[in-house]
Image (cartoon, rainbow over all chains, first blue to last red):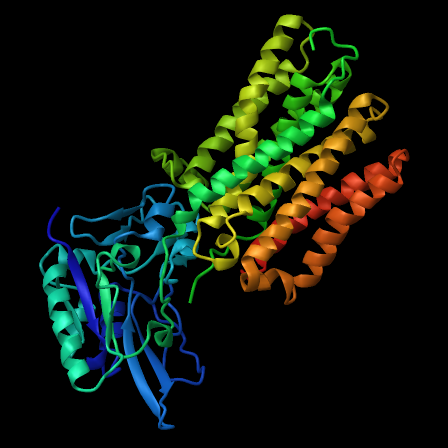
Length: 258
Length: 274
């Protein structure tokens, strides 16, 4: 396997221009969606089959009474332990040699299990093709040494793309710098390969707690439940079976081999 | 932030019918192996009932994909940790057991009877699997309501067994075969299953806590409390107790159990998807 490629999104540098969002739409030929007014500048609200990259606009009340404007360009995290990949019953969702997670459109059968198994609500179902889709880190581009369209388009280098180990070291330095500048809550999200989901291949530098950005504080792999729930089901089967056995037990009437 | 899969009525029906198929087969195999000769009718009805149901299950699953041939993509892999992958294979395997047992349930020779009993004992595992894996499948998703209690499989299994038994007893009643001893036994087994299902449901709600909100409050709550807990579980139990010897009441009770089983799948799937 080649060195793991990753995307580091430094939200402290994001200016909310949405160039990444537009570049993503253009390169991946994703159709337009009608914007909706929901009371914030953010559009669109969710990842869909036509939106793989979106800038979140978050207003956080500060103790002083005014609002902090937090911007975050969000994307598929390409988790090291990916719920969508484990859920896929056809093997359409696979990991590339660079550590990214892709959905093979030829193999996907449209069961939508991956959609409900993503801890971040990224994977979306395309009604037109009847398959699941999401960000691929611009698979075609990265295999030709170009880097994803969003990272290329970002004018402030808020989105950086490269080898994961390099980027993590860079990100850790940046957190220290920001802390020294007075951003007390500056922290990395998903950079730690020993942390949740084995680390995210798209990790973030946040200026506040993950919850402020509507990110789960401690996302878990959905498949962690398979063994426990199966064992409890077997227990349940034993109890139900015992009940039926008691009801049907032949008390020596009519059957001689009992 | 989380996305729900958008599974609709076809999947609700699949979960419901798969539960009955698994439950009916399991009841038949128990009656066949451990019951007396007078329970033969129960075994035959159970085996034969499971066959069209599992066929309907397969059709529903394939139809839900939109492009039917894409079903074949499931057969590329077998993932032991993935309930949906295992489930696709299990529907096929159970279908074969169901077919063979159904055919053999019309046998008249002692040798084929013995063979059928042995096959039933193996098939029973697939029956249980079909009835419960759909719950485990929901448990291993990212939705808190489906996953946090880790009891969805146990609940679906109890409900599958109970609806399977209810379906058998209803058919016995409708075909006028309710005179035998088997009818009373299958009703009794159904009562056990229902009491167990109520217990599992209570533990599940307790474990879920606030994650159970889509079910216990909001606009699915009346259907849950009234349709499942009331009409689907408590009323049938009371009807059975009060009308112990009145066959019509007992048959009505079985009908309500079936309705309750459908409501269970409906509220669990749809309450967080709408």
